[in-house]
Length: 257
Image 1: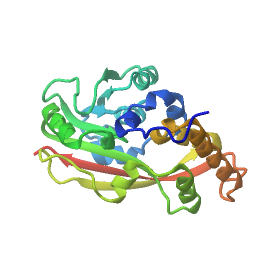
Image 2 (image 1 turned 60 degrees about the vertical axis):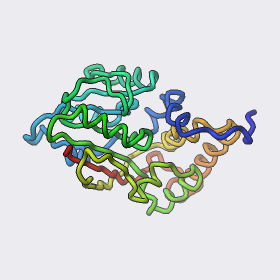
Image 3 (image 1 turned 90 degrees about the vertical axis):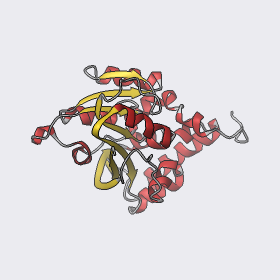
């Protein structure tokens, strides 16, 4: 059994931990609403121009898949080998490259847009902004997207109490998204939607959080068992085959100056 008095885990270690829970990430993390991607990039299915898009910090391809389905030409960039392999297996038609937001493995002025889904809080925002400016064509845009659980619903607020909050949730709550001077002011758009999930998928969503992945074993199982107890006892979730988990997707777009 692990010792809860273990040394604290750094933000860098947390950010590089997801490959250890790739299957939980695939099973438990939600997709992204098409409306958010359309606001950010346009929708070629509705007559908009298809764009060359770099999806940075793409993970297992949750956002990549929605961008590609809309009709854009997308290249996924991800530093974790296990996550990248999962993405490549799921989306064989998408170019998948190893790299980071601060070091994108693509030529200068090769993209119309760069997106970061659940990833901007893991990068150095000034270095990543400079790299995005290098890769973007004139008039290109930077897009930052986060799915956040809607804690105005009481059982969802209780879920966060059990799981703990994340740095991303704090960032969005404080309106403290930082983008480098290469870009103009960021516009913000919020889409409210629900993800239909089983109780086990919600447990696996909790298991895919970086601070749960890297927690001592005793703490990790305490969190996951706490999530199970909540879902088994809360009147809004107990006994339900399908649980509707409400989300608010926050999307930011900023144009290259």
